[in-house]
Image (cartoon, rainbow, N blue to C red; front, side):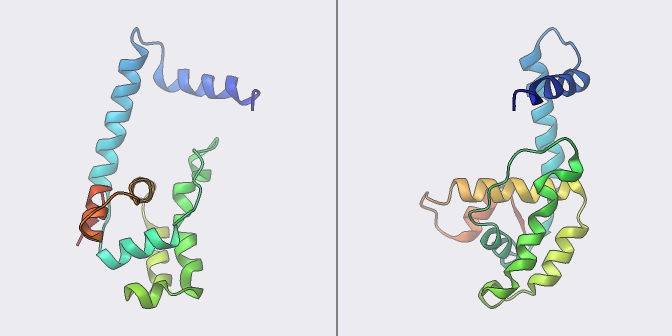
Length: 144
């Protein structure tokens, strides 16, 4: 792990530069990322969102590696495809293989949006909410 620090630091400085106010620059990047993800958030039915949440329940998504090609946001669709053998299709009334194809075809930014919803949804799953629609929208999902 220690050997990764210089590479991460180098990548950070290549992207962020040498601003006078590092925290201000990082806050700006985070704010911009949030806006980009929200603008590109895919609009899915409640059943599709719930199938994605169910298929990715308990999945550990580490931070992105060296390349965005290895970012786990790109692969949440695989869990949906694998859920075909479970009861997701019957439970939510959707074709999980078609949903997986739809997710795989999404842009990287859309996939990041889905990942954000997955993480926020499960982080708040122990809180009392009125219904699934409320949980999904609170996590940032766009529900048709």
